[in-house]
Length: 88
Image (cartoon, rainbow, N blue to C red):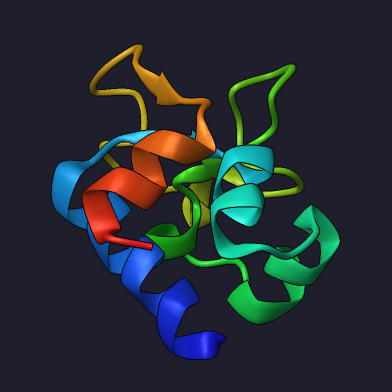
């Protein structure tokens, strides 16, 4: 499972687009809290995962957020987008 989580992290960093915890977790077949555990420490490359309500990574300080987090307003909210683009 960690390999798949890493694939999603790498993908989001490549496309520089935020994704809700819910969409990513559903695509991976796990719960959002389980996804957060797999992500581990708060760091910029993990900050692409955001809350559905706020569009922000939960609990991250400004220093922990990726510098390009808000380069686009687009947020992936569908598990199907992740699944399709990564072949899950």
